[in-house]
Image 1 (tube, rainbow, N blue to C red):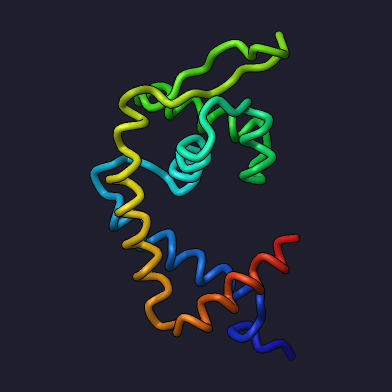
Image 2 (cartoon, one colour):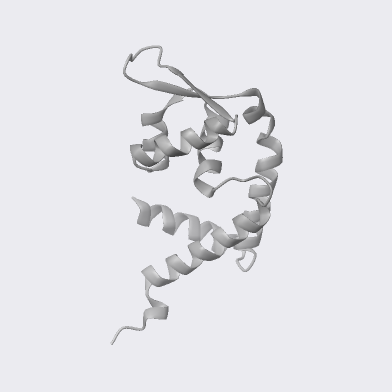
Length: 137
């Protein structure tokens, strides 16, 4: 018999649900999903990535990535431009509004992170990051 409440899959799913609930609560009024915030964060670090690069870095399939970019474009946070080196591709750039939200949204994301990891010591937090990274690859 399996002890489901001690299984890695169950615990990861429940931790993800808790993190998403905290994210939703803290980001209320910003109308962003965790995936949309993640795309913005990649662009704050390196603006002008192609959709394929964003898809690879975020490990989100290309079709889903296209929908995320569509929604952010409708919100006026990003814009697509023809790729300078590949006529079949587009690059995604932050708009002035998208750039201007970086400090505010990163502060909210840091609040989310503190709430999610508040039960952990610094050493446990570092261990969690290391283990999740190891599982991810």
